[in-house]
Length: 296
Length: 288
Image (tube, rainbow over all chains, first blue to last red; front, side):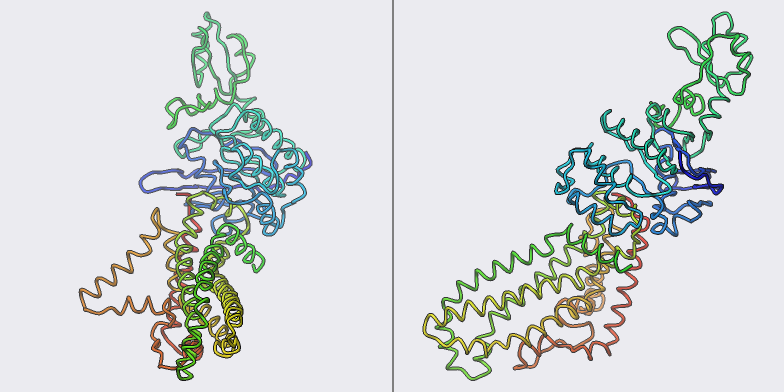
């Protein structure tokens, strides 16, 4: 990775809140995203992910303190967008526009857009410049939007449910492109999703959000060192429970327990120890009672 | 700022091709209608020759005035349809999230959208009207000449050039700038309405008009609204003395009269408030 690590956080929120009438979408959360990280913002549907991202992108007013690249996004959205690129959770490219017109427009208004890079990306696809967006498949629209966003030399890239409704080929292309971009430019990426499995091997940090609150914020290294999952031997169940697992479940007739900050050597005496998946950790920290059901 | 504004304007014309296609189609239909009429022109010119100079002039220019009047009405209709959907449409198709992901301010976007009814549409209608007038003049000249008539009476009778400048003033200053409060109001509603922006933009003014009529028996609010779209600024006299000619009618009220009219400046101030309101609403707007 070639990116320069900066001490100033890319995103810093203190007491970030948002209400929609009586509904509390964000309940005064504290958040910090440092430069050069790939952060997975994970939560069930309705957890507050999109609201948090909308506040970060300056799309909605908010309570509390929020700085993105040192600026207040609500007051300086248009200047902030020189350094931030984002894709919303559903197709937002207007159906009437031609691919060439979209490239012309973005090239004209965005000082950090590299048109040649976008065209190179599009050459790998079957998207032709004269085609209108309405003539493209859903996957092609996503590829087009991604080509534009990837060609913007933004310091922060925000993707909200970028793979929603798309096939596995596109998903793989997206994450390959993200990783390639990350290692090439070292920019900060925030990925919001309820689909944990597909980003597990991409992110450097995870933030769990549920009912407008942060349930966990940690680097993947911290996750690996703090949490252990043990497939407990039936004869060791009582001893295992004495170590107060944060979650216990049954799979294929075996008890599986998740421990936080428990010595690995001690756990090894209980059964087979392994690193928990992010999905398992999410269920342990957020639980099945999450508002939209557990993430996949 | 100017670069963003010009590209925002271009985007509006890409998206709303009907802004020039619809007036062009009407202009084409008018031209077809005129060609059919022009075959009766030799008889009309002969009958007009028996009239005095003023009535002869009126008989010759009448089709040109009708065409200009229809194109004005088309311009107003297209402007109203455009305004009510301008900020609602981008929320409906969710493209507002794309536009707001780019470093273009809400003010630049809203001003570009206001510029369409205030400047772009009047210029489109003016250009089409000039093209129509020239084609009409050439067609009628050819038909008149073919029937042994003197086409020179048409060229001297129509006074094309000064009338076209009068028309430009009328369209841009009176239908565009003086009517800006109406268009800005529609943009404000378009930025706010959860659905049916046309109904929301028409209902409040209609309600005020009805309440005024019932309570006071007057129609001043309705007259104030219609005045600019009818060609006059609010508060100015739009009456036309007989024999003033097309040019005089188009230039009324004059720029001088307009600039000293309190109603004109109050109208512009109200338009500015509506624009600021639309900018604030767009700032927090989400797809509907």
